Length: 327
Image (cartoon, rainbow, N blue to C red; front, side, top):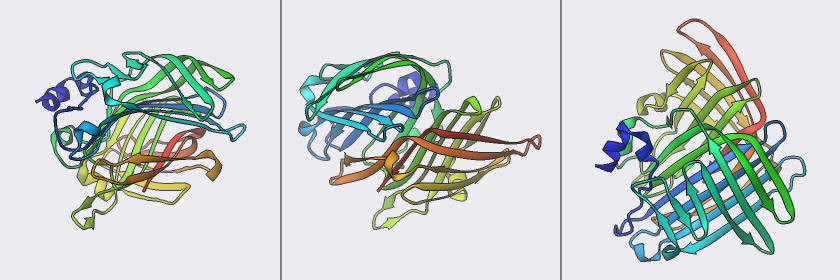
């Protein structure tokens, strides 16, 4: 019932879906990310609950922090695991707490330690944009696919500070997003990208994924879902039927895609060199782990042919693309 009501009110969908009484496995992440306005610098901060299948008593909170420095190539990574009794995930408001770290409307504060390095953040954010759904609205109430995602606040503007060891990093007008994803299992394989403002169009926003899931012993064909907001229009190519017709192929550092509907055709590439990525390991609720190559300073170039009026335009960014590959 909560999902059905949340489709009428997207703010509700941004509340936690976690229910500690259910025996089924569950993961749920609230991640915030942003890029420096001109330099190849970015942060990614993730508040997560993980519940292993059949063992709800072993649930934990996870606190992730990554700072990407494309100037030095020295990226900083932190992960802390927090006992579930020191965490809270509200299902009636946007309020997430993992240890002493807090995420509430327009604000995230927290910190942690990795090795001998201390990480801290105190950030505020604002966004006037409507949420973006990378799946059909009805799919959020279905059991398939098992993983759901929501861009709750696109083009969010962040201000505040980050501390990475003895380095103080002011955050003034960095642009990114506040996001929410959850499910009973991670998608089996995917490439995922997001661009919050292109170099030549700071108001444009791209969300795209090419994914495959297993059904029994078989894996589905790749499905490519895309939503682009640009030049005052939203190009939505996220329906399941359309996603199966779209094309997306990727390797460890490059992804090419071609998506179309009656409104437009969009082609493009996302890429990043090896030294732009960090390697992360995600626990999977059914068991085992997933390996993720993750960067927030990738390159993206797309070409749009708007069939409704014949316009053609190109959007590019040299180092503002989120780019993940999960295997």
